[in-house]
Amino acid sequence: MFYYLFEYLDRVYDLPGAGMFQYISFRSALAATLSLFISMILGKYIINFLKKNQIGETIRDLGLEGQKEKEGTPTIGGIIILGAIIIPTLLFAKLDNVYVLLMLFVTVWLGFIGGLDDYIKVYKHDKKGLKGKFKIIGQIVAGVVVASVIFFNPSVEIREKVVQTKEFTVHNSDSLSGFEKIQDHSANFSKVPTKSTKTTIPFVKNNEFDYSSILGVFGVKNKYLSWIVYLVIVVFIVIGVSNGANITDGIDGLAAGTSAIIGVTLGLLAWVSGNIVFADYLNIMYIPNSGELVIFMSAFVGACIGFLWYNTYPAQVFMGDTGSLALGGIIATYAIIIRKELLIPILCGIFLIESLSVLIQVSYFKYTRMRTGVGKRVFLMSPLHHHYQKKGYKEPKIVMRFFIIGIILAILTVVTLKIR
Image (tube, rainbow, N blue to C red):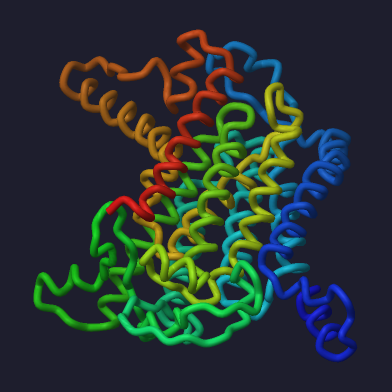
């Protein structure tokens, strides 16, 4: 919104300083600052409102230390995160950018699905919340919309590297210094038609992979069948990551802090993917207009960090499914847009091991019960963070060590840009 206002003031009235809003870096800083303000300052009033209206968490007795003390802690705090993401994005991002609009849709839609779950838990006093099948349907809808927009929207394109250059003068709001004499990097990339199902594979030299080649193995060449393959993959990723974030949100600060670490990394990847100079230097896929996503991710990171102010141990508020489902969906969609979704197992390693711990625990228990009549467990309790609680570790120590692992995984993800 402000982008268009200051663009007009700069163009018509030549207002000093108005041109700053042309730069992604400046608007990203504003978005991060405002999201921090919303989540930390306004968040306090939202928490007080939740307390006043007794919108508190109902705790299941799992036999964990300090668990009962959390009874009644305000929940549905995810609305703080959602507001701190949406408002700065609306104010500072280009609202005609297809990627920004797609991210806003996923944020609102999955926040709504999670909100329904929290509403049923709190107001209907049903600990199970929204039935699992309805959550899955909501996540499938999100995945279908994401896959359809990326595949069919004419504004979505990627560009691959070619070998030819010429010199010229450019003004690029994504560049480091505005008007500057550089190589014509646009001549280094050829446009890939819309309906592309290409993505990036980490650690290999020829690091682009087309999902449609899966059909090619069977001798099938049909663009709409390619879309179906792509659709299935996108839906699987959205469901997997959003549920992974939901499972991770089991102890104070873990989901919000981990999401912030992931967000910083994705923001960096979007910056280089949407900047023609960096994409050329790093020899990666150039995705025009994706740099605008850095503003959205700046708001996302600011919202998560601001929320941590109240969510660290002992938590004054829980995000609930309102926040956790939306966080996971945002991360999945963002990675898909910048064609880095195959990095998710590395970058979102915390979500992955948390989800796997549940899958392993349930599967092994059912298998041993079927074979011997007595179910056995691999972990003392799942998800994995509860296993360490059962072993006697304090919540802050578990969370901090998970953060350290998350940072290591984030660094490894960034390093994949050069290790091939």
